[in-house]
Every structure is written in C-alpha cells, then in structure tokens.
Image (tube, rainbow, N blue to C red):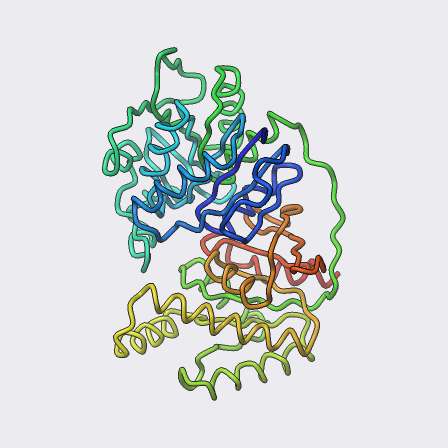
Length: 398
C-alpha cells in the first residue's frame, strides 16, 4: 500500500507540491501506472482544474479506489480555482475527516478567519475573480465549500481544539510558515490521515513526516533558457514585461496574426535569439494589449474559451518544440495547461520534481517513452515576483 497519495488538479501544481516529498514522480498517462505497487509517495495529476463538478468527483473517487493509501493529500489551487468544495467533500465522504490549510505565505497567500487573502487583499478582489476559465468570486472557505456540498466544516487557528467526533473538513488559518508547521504537527498528533492545501501546507506536512529535504545538485544539459508561457495571469504578464524591459528578448507568438506563416516566423525568430542570448522568451502575450488582441481574434472566430486555451497552448508548444529541435536550451514552462501541452508535444511520459529554485519554481527531470532524461523548469502562472524570470536567468548563467 502507498504511504502517501498526492492528488492534484493541474500539472504545475502537482510538481510544486510533490517536490517536498521524497521519491514523488508523476506519470502523464491518465491511468495510474503500477498503482498496486508499494511506494512511499505516489503523485497523480487528475487534470481536472477545468472539469465539471461531477467529473471532478468521479475522477477523485476512481483515483482513491485504484490507489489505496495510508494518507492522502489533496492539492488545491492556492487561488481556490476549480471545484475545491467538490474535491474536499468527495475526499471526506470516501475517507473521513480532512484537515485543510490552504495558505501559502511564501507566495503571499494567507488565511485569516477562514477567508483567503492575496498579499493582504481579499481573494475575491484580485485578478482571480476575472480568471477566463475559472473565476473565483467567493473567498470565505466555508461558503465556498457549502456551494458544492453539505460537508460539515470547522474553522480554527493552529492549536484550537477539534471535537473528537468531527467528521467533516477542518479549515485552518495560517499567516506564516510557522503557522503551517504548527498546523501540520497538530493534524498528525490528532491522527488525521486526510490533508488538503497547496504547496505551503505540503512543505510543512512533509517536514513533519520526513524531516529536512536532502541537498540535490542542479544539472542542466544547456545553460540557455527558453521561457515558454501561455499564461495570461496578471502576475505572469508583469514578469514577462519586466524581463523584456530589462533586456531579455521575447517573441510574441502571434506577432502579425494567427496564421501558420506567423507561427513559423515566431519559430525562426526564437531560434535566432537563442543563438545570441542566454535567455529568450516565447509567449502568447507579454502584456494586456496582446491578451486582448488574442481574445478578440478567437471571439470573432466564435471559438469557445476552452477551445481557445487548447489551441493556444498547442500552437505555442509546437513552436517551442521546433525551436528546441534546432538549438539546445532548457525549457522554463509557465502554467499548468502550457506544461501539459508542451509535454504532449515533445513526448514526455513522466516528470520527477527534484527541488525548488524559488517558491513555485521547480527544477524537474522528465523522461520520454525510451527512458531518455530531459531537464525542465516549471512555474505556476500566478506565482513569483516581477523579477523572477530575470533572477532565474541570472542564476543559471553563473
């Protein structure tokens, strides 16, 4: 039996959470591979961020049945996107009480009196409320969960008492990493075996279970960096724009239009820049003007938001694949949907998160069907400060 099963709803989230647990590796096949084999930690990406509520419940139920585990960690989005209420309700119904600590203080996500804040602003008042695929308009966690199920909830601060007969979801506040460490120790001491949260609580839980992570060595096949981004999260656009303003060259995938000729031109320009620069960016948008132009094009073509996202990530990944086939570079992929499409394009079947280069920025090794190893770096779209791309490029160039 697996000791710990990690379930995540998107790929970058799976990696920035799994990185804290020794031996975690994700198979990109949707069916768990060797699910019955004993292991310390099994990491599954259910890829259900944009799924309907019932589909979310079904895939979680199936994953729990196919992979028996002593403990389960349900990785939730730090911005509460997706069907968080359905996910936690399904887990509680299947396995009993759940200890949920959604904060990630290292990335500015805190929970106060059961309400989620981003850098001190209520979640519902941030860009998350305008997310094109998963807008989040409720930041009071008890209310959010109640919208999707009738699971019992209890909001606490670390150390507050929890009734012995409680059967639902405990929602634990945290404003600092110290709070999360205390929450993890409390949950384990009380005998909880079901946990939920993002990478912040995962770090605390892993430290309580296994102690400090071992030191690992950074190895790159190439010190050139190709930034690949289809994310239009305001944080990502700020990062791309900041890097461009500080001298890192960038290629707008749709410069001049959305036809095959423009995509081929973007590939050629990316290759030229990679030959002359240690870091090049290839993105579907570098600013809000680019984002609006893309949206207007796909809306005028009467293409749905979901189909638009799939087409954009597929076109970006095809372009990146062609560029990387002509010049060696380490891919730095931003956004879970982008990463999924990129892995499909270049034929990766598994990814092992090795260590964090910065909060949410993960150094990984990946493998193709023949077992050949590739290196890539990943980041969730909403993570990182404005200078994170420049900082990463500088650190890899040293």
